Length: 317
Image (tube, rainbow, N blue to C red; front, side, top):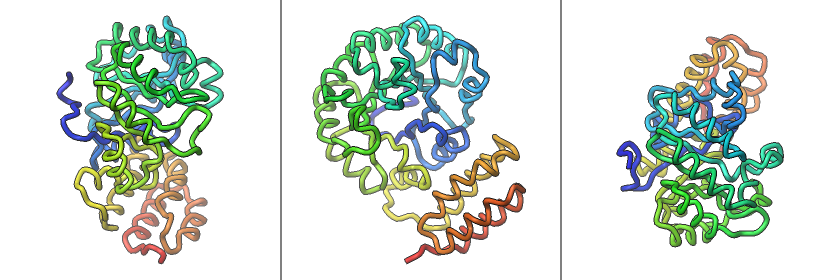
């Protein structure tokens, strides 16, 4: 097994989230404590058709080591073609198959959580990735089932098809992102298979992450939405610190802004507005700041306002 990524102690993984876990965000969480970062989900179809946008999303930061690329697909031939393209890229350690995305556009193509309805096909696709890939590891991201839970059967099939580890989002496809996460089901998967299992779903605080690890016996946690607006959750887990001071938050936020500008140039300013919104939650004067930055497009001016706000900002009581 690749020594870059081992499960000798709990691993902390950033989940792929469309529109959020781009290169700048991943490089920040990696610098501040994540063990593994995963690309945004890439369509095998788009890879095979050399989509410029998709190939751009393959780029990684130099600090992202190890690095996982997540693909979706429902055709064995197209997935094979996509893996062959990924084989020509250095710096990718893991290819991850998405078997959990509930978005209708993805499910309509037979990809994502649609694969939960056809386990033999899912198994064949996993085997195809495993057999074709020149990367160190193959992994799978799954849900508990499509409409009803059959999580243990899914997990066993994933293991039998050759995956090195799996991540479990503790909801069915029907549960989308709103229903309660079934951590008992993740525990049942952990007890049923011998490959490492990473728990995912509603892990939005240091305390919750610790509880999920303990409750499920999982080999790690994967955090997505819980890291948006709070990427320091990885630092908390890595350093076992429940509380984090504002100076470190300030440093991480400014690092994120700088990386956005470095990667996207001028366009990074407008793109950072959604992050400004999440970072300022709970701060005094947050809504005033949000209104103010909505009209600013100058890189330095935006940076100075952010810098001042987080340097002297206070949490609202």
